Length: 115
Image (cartoon, rainbow, N blue to C red):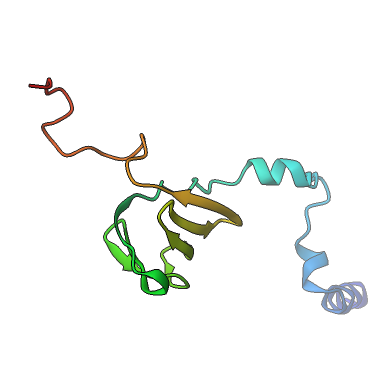
């Protein structure tokens, strides 16, 4: 009985972390943990319209009307000018311009031949 009591006292004195650690588990390397991330890259932003008016310029990004300094879902607008909209996103800067090849075209015009 004394042995069981001593074991109980010893196990309660140990931190909970030590009690739950698997002695046969290998620690995951930091690089492997980064590769195992299931986070998908953010969807591309689409610049739909620009209204240039100096410091009060506006842009329509994916349906949201924003000005310089505004925050949208996952991005911050840094600058709006005649070149496009400069946004900060995921730690990087990205220039959105009108008519980027990755942007959608109006439906029905993809295969239409010029008249």
